[in-house]
Amino acid sequence: MSVPLLDLSLQYTQLKEESDALWLDVMSNAAYVGGPRVEQLEKEIAEYCGVKHCIAVGNGTDALFLILEALGIRRGDEVITTSWTFFASIESIAHVGAIPVLVDIEPGTYNIDPAKIEEKITERTKAIMPVHIYGQCCDMDAINDIAARHNLVVVEDACQAIGATYKGKRAGSLARAAAFSFFPTKNLGGAGDGGCITTDDTVLADRMRLVARHGEAQKYIHTAFGTNSRLDALQAGLLSLRLTKLDEWNNQRREAAAYYMQHLEQYFKGAGDLKMPIERDYGEMVYHLFILKSVHAKEIVSYLHSQDIGSALYYPKSLHEQEVLNKLPGFIRPTLPVAEDSASKTFALPCYPGITRAQQDEVLAALKRYF
Ligand SMILES: Cc1ncc(COP(=O)(O)O)c(C=O)c1O
Image (cartoon, rainbow, N blue to C red):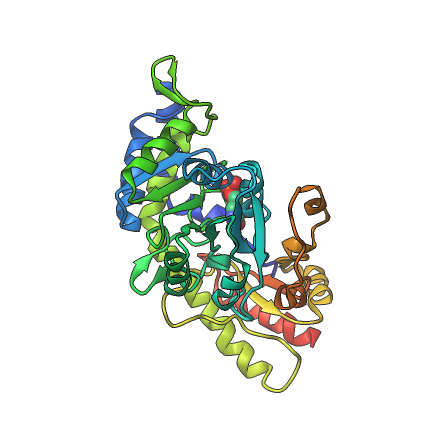
């Protein structure tokens, strides 16, 4: 039986009638970008995350860029973030002219290690950007405390973590502003690119909305050099439909992860070197990815492929090891032992809403055969 790393068709088939009707309606009304569906989605996401404002934008990368821009982070400023994330997190920092200062991670959660943040703060530091990696919130109280002591702003990169909680609050409501991605593979994904920003700060929200719409304060009156970052009506309608299923889908991911962990612990007691993901008890992780660690990760991934099972390294390289950073003036390449030791050793197993126990058993049996 073939088991893909991710099966997006299930999200479509579960809402097929509504999604098809939406598509026809958008096409026949020919109102493609912005409009009431986008406004409705913004309301729903703000309510879901428990914040005052949501601004729909073109993608998660833009969301991060727009937050940093609106916060006034500029050339020569430093933003502290993790080395263990998708490239977009640090790209957004570079795009406002600031310098990413990369910090090591906690083993097992792969999130930024709050104990290693303070030593990186300088007089140029303006912000801390924790990334809720793989769908688990960072330890936000620890991070917000450091920020408060040093008068820094905190921005959540919540692109992988919609629905995840921290001490009863949802990702997206844990700092000054947060970025989400609606890329199709995300826990809440559309049929194309999309993203949004959440915040309680009304002044910041107004600035981000302005900059995302060409700085256009009134029709053809521009008060800022902005950009074009909009969501279209089809994505917004589809995301509204899928938002009604998000908690159910996230629970299915959590159940699938629990099943893997229970069985892997039994199989691998004392055998192999597989390291389970660590779920912290301060919140609920939404398993954007189910990640194991092993020195044999590369071989395991290719063995699983040979058995028709989807798997991939997340990530083959940590960001402070990327050569392109040589091109960034002011960037200082740190030594980050935990991130370095994770590169090419962490890999994902299929873990998505709708995966069956039979499919998971197939994955487990293949792993067992490999070892
Ligand atoms: C942690 C993280 N940040 C930012 C992004 C960027 O989101 P998008 O692809 O929507 O631009 C992603 C998407 O892969 C991500 O995983």
